[in-house]
Length: 279
Image (cartoon, rainbow, N blue to C red; front, side, top):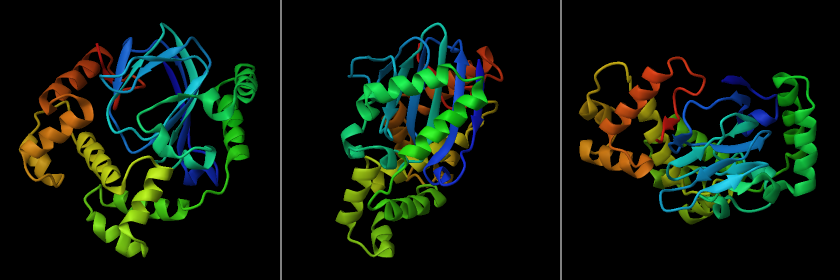
């Protein structure tokens, strides 16, 4: 599988982590994507893929692409035999400058790219991307599209600054102190977060802490779960286990088994690190 990624130029860097190109056979027909403090925009250039936003939700099909705001639980991606797309990994607040609807309306409800940008605009973008000379040219075209659509967003400065404080602390922050430091009420802060990210500051903090904890796991060696939970600031190992199941549907030990399976069956794969086999 070919994976090409690059950081965008300013001012997109304030809302986008990276742009990427992906083509090839997925390591598994179904991949589980644990929640992380980020949003996702995909322009699909191959056969349709499918997404299940939660165990109790039916699979949805996405032919043109999709937009996923910051999730609160694991998503399942079902890929065709050969997939091809370009996409954007956005910061938690990164979708807001490109959207006309509050992020709360998209929370755990992925939508097609056509629903966001319109059928004609998306068709024209996909045609330009399909005619490009290679991955780098495609990423340049996508970057230009994002630059054209980038717009001023009320409250973005407040949400971005507060989110960076949460990220800097790895999620281990007193939420009440954030509104005091920002000079706004906790209600106002929560409303802005829901509008621009889709979740409250507390939920964002939980996601940052969970993500940091998972990335601290070395799947190649033994894991002391109690020590890991303590260093991450969880009340105890039971609390840590509860968070793990809430975010992934897996126990920590089962997560480690599945993670090791990916490493064993696909060493050095481009997608290694976050997605997990779901079958």
